[in-house]
Image (tube, rainbow, N blue to C red):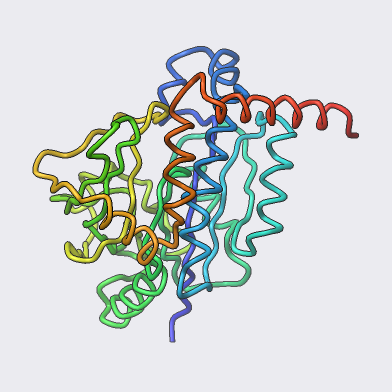
Length: 299
C-alpha cells in the first residue's frame, strides 16, 4: 500500500520573493512592515485562537503543519513559535531565506516528512483561517482512494477540494457570518496529492485555475473552512456575491461543533482586536514590547 503523508504549510509572515503586497517596497521597508510588533502580535492572536484550535480538534491527528518563516524574522517571534511547537505536536518550524512561492513551499513540505513516502497530500492554510474538525480525516480517506484508483500518480497530481465554508467579516458590526460554496477551488481547504520530489504542490498554480492543471475531486456540501476578513488581510478578501447570511446562533454552533472554536471567548476578542485604540490592541502592544525586551536580554 502506498505511503501517503498529510502535510500542511502555513506561510507565517514569510518574507519571500513574491506573493505579498509588502514586496512592492524595498526589502528593508518590507521587513519593517511585516515584522512590526503590532502586526505580528495580531498574526499570533489569529494563529493561536483560530487556526491552531481547529487543528487541535482534528479527529485524525496523524498530520504535520509546517510554519514557513523567513530567516529575517526577529528571534523573539521565532521563540514564540518554538513554544507553540512544543505545545502542539503537529507543528514544525521551517526557516528559509527569501525564495519564490513554489521553491520555498516545496522545501517546506519536504521538511514535514519523517520518513520516505510515496505521496504527500499537501494542504495550505493561512494563520487567520480554520478548517473543519474532520478535514484531515476526510482528506486522507479521499486521497488514499484516489491513489488506489490511479487517479493520482507520481506523474499526475490530483487535488481534493472542499468548496463550502463560512466567511467571517470581522469589520462589520452586524451580519458578520456568511455561508458560501465556491464555484472554483479555494486555496483554503484544498490539498494536492503529489510525489515528494514533484515540481507540483498546492501552491503551484493560482487556486482559481487549479482545475486547468490538475484532476480535482470536489465536495460542495460540507462546511470545511472559516475564512476571515479583517483590517489586516494581506490579500484582498470580500464576501462573495450569492453568499447566504448565517444567523449568529447558527454560526456560533458551527464554530463549536465543526471547527473546535470557542465563540464565547473568540468573538469578543476578535471584535476588540479590530479596534486600533482598544484595550486589546494596547495589550498586544505591551506584550510585543515585553517579548522584545526579553529577547534582547537573552543570549
